Length: 131
Image 1: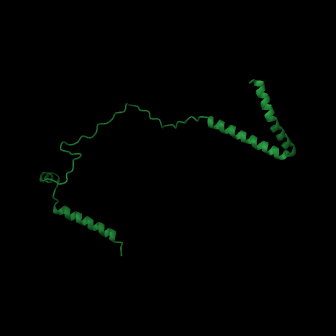
Image 2: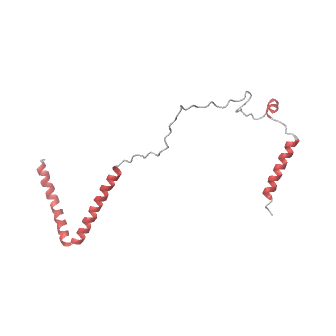
Image 3: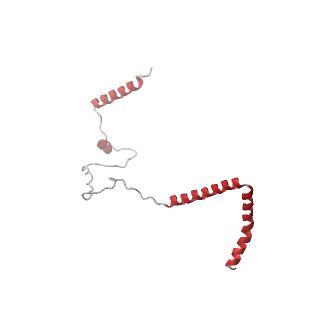
């Protein structure tokens, strides 16, 4: 196929469409102008959207957000644990007598009385407003 034959085939197929558009324009000039203006505005909006979407915005740098160190960063040493400190232990279903002696302390009467007073005060505060 030759380029000229392609052009001729296209002219044959497009010429009836062009004739229909001309006839419509002659019959309805006002409506034709409104349609043409709307199509032109549509193309203009599409072109503007492509232009705006194509721009890449440079991220603006806010002053003072960049950290500039005056000295090298030094990571501090962690806290040192005491010699007999146990951070975690495996729990058993039942304590042995040795474990009970090591971990359990029997409260003295003064501590029990203080806990009882604190609990009574809490109960009175909660139920104080109740009728």
